[in-house]
Image (cartoon, rainbow, N blue to C red; front, side):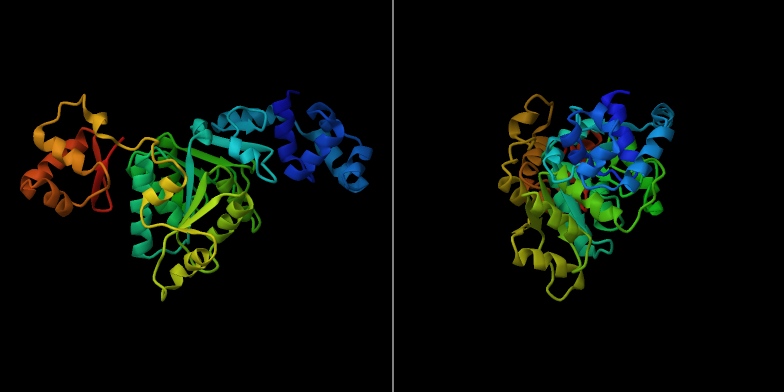
Length: 361
């Protein structure tokens, strides 16, 4: 068995999780010896003879080659902590997954990423601010990470795709199982558009009560920071935020109405150490990511743009604008402006989202 095979086998074995494997490797020193561990080795890490018996039974019955064939048939790859694709940030958390099961573009795992999370039930305000912030973040070449849940997660993933950005969905189930089922279309769109689906759970695994908090540590773990756009007082997004705090990462939150139950969670975060956000620049500046991929006038110097097109592009350099806002800046008649905007969008130079236009970089 290769080292990768052994990591995969441990990820599926009973009794052994990330922390126990780490302890076992301290005792045995190598993956080969860990897989051949004895009852005495298990005793050294605080596990009983009964626990060893369950592990030994699995070890004797499990056929890793057969499982690898199943993974290949489903288009699933694995990434272990020894692989260069394994996220550097994730290695630093307290209990990094033994294996990541991946479907899609695994190169995204080490790109600059921000987790955008929130409640499953959203208001029109929550949806609008999520769309606005995500559209501007992807313009800065930031990968959007979330959990494929209903509500803010779905809006974040969709907004990234609509703006031709990259997105990672972290599941609390196996990567071959879309949960919730209502998001099967979104799941497919993520894969179709060079995105990534990941999980630490094996093929066919269905969510349990504990799988979502565990999933949230991965969302936080692969991201530079967490952005909570709208959250109730008991939202699971707050668990993700707490995980980020444990990992020493910054929390950003969008202020909402003090009379809305949908904003109670974000208000509580802002009473603590969360940083108030009203624009994507608040996040990018705080993380020193402003220079990554943001548009500059020189970016369009080699394009054959008319004088009016250049005016529009320059107006959209600093922020996304509505049609009325563009009109007020460039002084082009609205009917003509709409035609030019449509042409620029067809050429792939600008994108529209949430009633506003922005540059596509």
